[in-house]
Structure formats: C-alpha cells, structure tokens
Image (cartoon, rainbow, N blue to C red; front, side, top):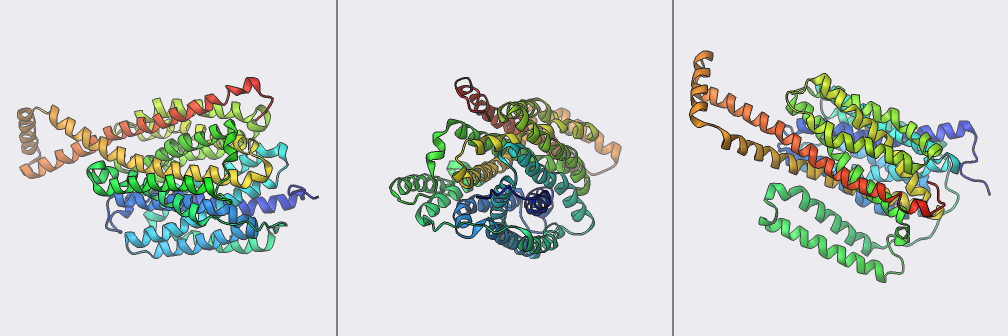
Amino acid sequence: MKKAWDISPKERAIFTIIVMTGAFMAILDTTIVDVIVPKLTGPLSTDMFGAQWIITSYMIAAAIALLTTEYFIKRIGAKGVFLTGVATFTLASLACGLSATLEQMILFRVIQGFGEALIMVTAHIMIFSYFAPEKQGLAMGIFGLGVSFGPAVGPTLGGYLTEYYDWRMVFYVNVPIGIILFIAGWIHLPKSLTFDKVKFNILSFSLLSIATISLLIMLSRGQQLGWFNSQLIGFFLLAALVSFALYALSELYSHEPLIDFSLFKNITFVNGIMIYFFVLGFSMYQYFYLLPIYYEHIKMLPTFDAGIAVFVFALFIGICAPIAGILADKIGARITLLAATIVYVITSMTILPSLNYYTPLHQAMILTIPFGIGMGLFFAPVTVLLLQNAPTHKSELAIVLMDYFRFVGGSFGTALATNNMEYFKNLSFTRMEELQNTQYLSDFLTNAQDQMSIAHEQMSAIFGNYEALMSYSYGFYNTFVHAGYWGLLGSVFVLLLFIPYKFSKETA
C-alpha cells in the first residue's frame, strides 16, 4: 500500500507550501492582533480587560473546536477539514474588520478561532504525513518555521497597518490570502483515501466545553470582579467543577468516548502534554502578550515601532525552529527539548524581568533575543516527542490533544498576564504612596510648579502620571517573574523525561 510520504519532491514542496501558508495565516492573526490590542480600547469603547477578550475568546473557541477536529477528519478527510477551516477563517476575518462594537468583535473572533482550530490540526497532520518517519524532526522543524514566521512578521505588519492605515486592515489582510489559499488547496492537495463512520459524543463535548469556558471566564474576570467576593465568579467555578465531574462520568460510561484516554498510559506522552501546557501555554504565551504592551505602554513606542521591537526576538524563533527539528532527528528530541528549556527558563527568570522604563530600547531588544532562541528550539522536539509516543492510528488525537492543551494553557496564560499586571501595578502604586514623605512631596511640587510656571493642579496631574507610569513599570517586573515561574514548573516535566530513560530502549 502506498504511503502518504511516497510522493515526488515537487509534490511534497507544493503540498508543504499550501499547508504552511494556512498555518502561517492562522498564527499570523494571533500575533498581529496582539500588538494592536492596546489600540482597540478606544474604537471599541472598552478597557484592557475587555480588549483581552479579543484574544481570549479566540483561544477559547479554538480550544473547544479542537475537540471536534478528529471526528471531522475521519468523516470528510483532512483536505475537506482544512479547506473548511480556511473558508471559515477568511469570512470571519472580514467580519472582524467590519465590527463596530466589542460584542461583535468577540463573536466573530470566536468564529475565527473555530476556523483556526481546523486549519492548525489538519496542517499539523498533513505536514507530518508528507515526510518519512526518520524525517519527523525535519517536518516539525519546517512546521515550526512556518508557525514561527507568523510571530516574526505579525507584530511588525500589525504595527505598520495600524500606524499608516487602519486597525481594521489587520483583519482584512487575511481575506485575499485566504481566497488564494482555498483555490490552491482545492486544486492541489491530495484527497483522503479512507473515511471512518465514527460517532460523535455530543454530551461529553458539551460538558467539556462548558467546563472549559466557565473555568477560563472565572480566571479572566476574577481580578476585575474581586475573585470570590463576586457571586458571578463563584457561579463559574461551580459550573466548571460540576461540568468536569459530569464529563468524567459521561466518558466513563460511554461506548463512544470523546477522548481516548489510553494515550495517557504512556508517561512520556503525559509529560509532553504537561510541558506543552505549562511551558508553552502558561508561560510563553504570557510573554507574547506582554512584550508588545511593554513596548507601547512603558517604552511609549508607536505601534509600528513596537512591532519592529517584537520582530527582533520573533525572528530568532523562526531561525531556530528548523535547527531544532534537525537536532531532534540527530541527537534526539529529549536532549534538544532539555537545551531549549534551559535557555528559556534562564531567560524568563533572570533576563526578561530586568526590562523596565529605564532600559534603553536597543538593550531591551537584545535582551529578548534569548527568549526567541529558547522558544524557537522548543516547538519541534516536544512535538516529535509526543507523536513518537502515540500509536500511528491515534496521531490525529495526539495532535488534537496537543493543540487543545496549548490553547487552553494559552488562554490561562493571557488571562493571568492581564490579572497579574493589574494587581501588581495597583500594588506598586499603593506602596509608592505609602513610602512618600507628604511634606517633602508638597515642597517639591510647589518648587516645580514655580519653576515651570504652571498651576498646582497641572503639576499634581503630571506627577500622578509619573507615579502611574512607574507603578506600571514595577508591575511588569513582577508579572514577568510570575510568568517565568510557570516555565519553571513546566521544566520539572522535562526533567521527568529522563527518569525512565535509563530503563527504556525508546529513542525520542
């Protein structure tokens, strides 16, 4: 029987370009929106908590949609699901660009997130199938290069379009790409040869979706509403716990479970999922969300310049991704992943927290490069590790679970970043006021207003803005450190990969 990778180099190149263009478009939209979020508070009449939902709603929708992809792939094939995802994503991008209110934007971002889930899972599966087993690391390196090129280009492109045209262009740019991609995929991508008449567990899907949404809303709105002082937060916590419990019972007694948990009997697979969840989702996604805000709100850069600053570290993600794939094939995924994690943890715990208002721009850009290197080296080996520890006939489910935990972890990470930023900013402001000598401050403001020949109210407002800026700067330090803690937690699971290694002949 002919294998999926038994194709000519020309076919492999064409298929890979089409698939990677889809993945690039989907990932590009995530990072291109990150850099414009601070600019949307005015046009959409909201604050940073509301603007955060433009990102979080997208990721929640993608995480939930991922649970349906394995079913659709088996019923209509990877090509059909990929093209459906492209069409959905493209139409939703157009609708996002036309949105006039925050509610409309969130609705269409949900639809867009659904499209991204279909694209990313099928792209992941197809690119993996075009290369022989001994070239899996290279395949994931190429995939990592594609999905890393989006973060490299996204902030700069988003900044340019916002600065010189309009923020709506950030969404409109997907439309011509999506149309061309749909036509090319329809003509060139190979059709699936086999289809399975599987059943979809609607009950388990609904319960898990409710649990996921409730938990993420609770986390996202907790800081804003005062955590458990709010009845709404308590309601969402209860809904999450009850839904998870009912989901577990549904899966236990169902003849057609939504998720085949036999994959989790492999301890290496479990460790890989936890690494994805904590290092990539909880930790790395926080920095991707926070760094554009740092450059815009602390360094006071225009959106385009902030995009260029982010481009510096994101470029190294793209450079290191294929290198990591080659290393995973040559020296093994475990060793490559360990090296990536060491670089990342050192960067997140010692280098990134040093960024503040007084850090020169060129120095800040240089200090983020190790973060780009660590993230670039991370993706390929952890993906190869997971797929090599999943049976071939369950590779679709393995990829679905990887992306589900990535999106859920990323949603948590983004929400945590917003909550921590607000908390530590307010805490720093309070601490500064507590330490102030009121008499000295009054004399200082009086002398300053005399020298500048301005009114007392104006001088007080200037000093208040300075205090707010400094509290924001100090808040970033603590938020960066806490994001690093999650990476440190995830590194424990990297170390656990080596415990059974001495007793196993597996190579990964």
